[in-house]
Image (tube, rainbow, N blue to C red):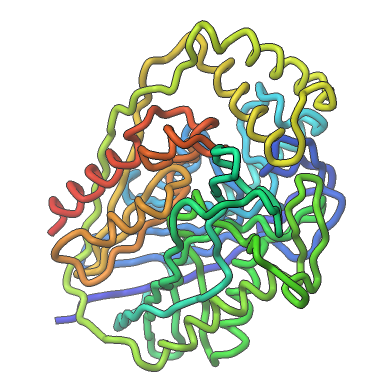
Length: 454
């Protein structure tokens, strides 16, 4: 028997001019707005159990900050803390979300702006959750898997010199072959209510397409708007999937592939028009399956969270002197004295920052991993950027109709590369604060949670 109720809400969380923009190891301050940032909230209820999923147009919200926000939403709504899931879509043209400013990445922005925005976001998240809960109505759920081809690409490559590089550049003659593969599946959940429909979309790819100093929710915003313009009485929200090793860059791009794009500071082609293209393609995956979903009754709603201890990727004594020097030069704004360019420069700067930060430990971190079961449809909340292999591993969990991995949910702890990536190298593994094995442990812990929810 179907017992599901669903509520939806949307609020604006666009910041004030001048706030620092997250996403790069480079100072950027907001100069304007291309499109507004949003919080999209989905409230779920079966019998007396209620859960709220909040999707925020943010690059990432740190674990400590997420804890503050979740507690405030829980206190405001009266829901248990573990029933609040806060997800960042990972837009690289959104502001830092900080309740402290002891971080060189936010230099150039006033403490007042950061504090103002954090307080704004805290209140708006609580508003969105409250509105969504007030909007709870009987609903039937349908599911289906679509496909979004040729918009997500592996971004790690083996080069002729044997090294692994992230984003080595379009047409680079030194590329031998990509490392990894892409999951083009688009998970779609459709919730039909008496007078409208709410659509939840789950797909893994980096929203790092727009670039520049103007605020934008990147391609997830285009996705939401395109779906809502194409279908009557529909509201759309998006939860990013396993996207740590994929982005929008096709190294074999030619001719029209470069429409509406420019070559950015790190030799990555970006552009607002290309974000629109990706949003349209992913929206097309929704349209492929919207009318042909498989409807199922939902008679249960369960959620769970665990804390897993993950070993820290601490530097060796031999690595520290150079890391300290590179980190100092970067903090002084003297990247020109670091003998690397483009994405290789970003890689060594990120690696140096990781080594300096972890030179005195800790030896391990506690990582919160959560799961939610809506009937036989499951979500896994991962507090960082999982490689595609993690998403594939979780989707293979036995006994589930569909598993939706959600990156950057209830935290933002950096990259979770597969074990072999640490031997290969590249930006993600060299910057990760976790030792090799973190990805495989996340799969194991996630599947264990799913087993407990069955």
